[in-house]
Length: 89
Image (cartoon, rainbow, N blue to C red; front, side, top):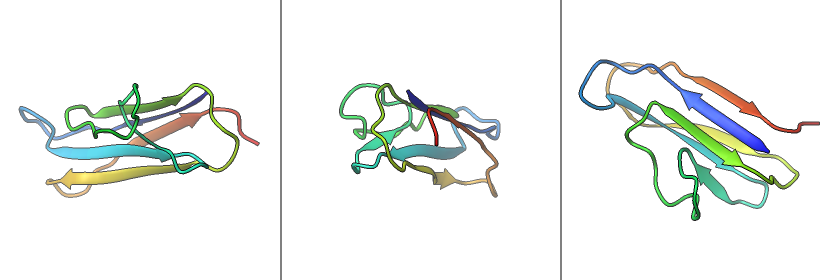
């Protein structure tokens, strides 16, 4: 399986101040958005959590594109951590 997880610390507030989105595109051009675990996997973007994951149980071979997109970065720059795992050659 392929798994990617994005995490970041956010500024204090009632909701996210800085919002990042995790987007993974497989070799066939299929897009997987973070925290969308049922088809269609590109139906929405998570705007509520500072942890986002993409899980692909049976990934096709090839090159995957992993993007971290700042959809709203209201306070300066935003550090983050990105971890991914799977079979790599």
